[in-house]
Length: 363
Image (cartoon, rainbow, N blue to C red; front, side):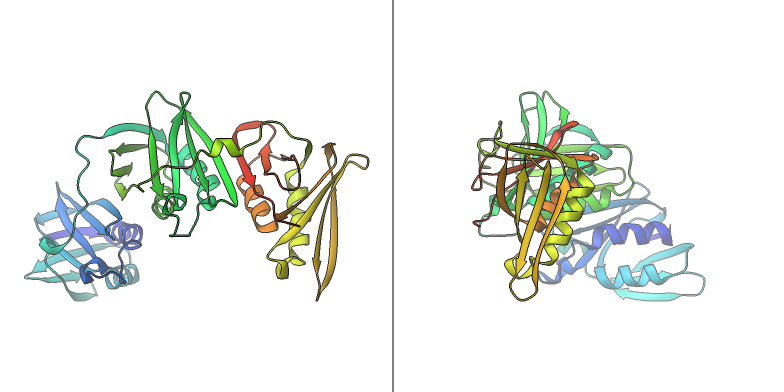
């Protein structure tokens, strides 16, 4: 293998790919990245057996070849080099990296020992705008669970329903649902949230279309010169739509910034009660008030003006409220519930494509 690449392109590729290289796995080679020449391009790839990322960069190839080298060392070294052209040359299992003033040799391991994710040969394929996909991921992924004891909830459910594509995540304490695009495809994909966080980083400033290819076991996202493939989670996603109320006894409409401010202030006094705050809607005074008590520190009540329909009181986790408000995009927010033990729904009154559900705490 002998080729030339630019330091900028190689650094960007190693940064995108090295995140999934695992030093904790049982296979030591998983801590490596795979470098391989493909059609006058250099492919840089890494996998942890659940997720694989491949980044293709333009290069001037003199000799074909492949090798795996330690991901961390390769990334740290290349990112430290000055910008310009880098020469890569493989001699036996030693990768020689040189620039005008730097020469280095990194000991590699044969590419034949590197595990490869099976290819998707007979899958469905469709496209979606990167901008829509990125916004949707930012609004939904944070609601997925981290609890490996319930693997289904550690995923994001991408599915079609009545001719539209939806993305949903829940950890059983909160739920986020986003409507993406109209589709004629029958789609049911339960994708690990960890893989979608990697996809979110890869999307970055990309503005084209993302191609999605999937079969029963895997899904592949093609983002320009980068490909991310991940195994799907097995299991059936809960019928979450039954949780979302369609009518409400108590509802408030107010400025999103106002609700965020009074929640932030109240959360300062809610730290010792695991973020618990009590929200009261007062029809007569047209105010939403949030109260929090810290036995050691004191207590706080903050209020904001709102359009109120029906009095009501409910206790919620303040961090979940702030996450939901951050995910919403509009200037206004509706805050609605049916009773102190029923789910609360936050939504943008001018956009019907996103809603956030928070389960109450026992007050």
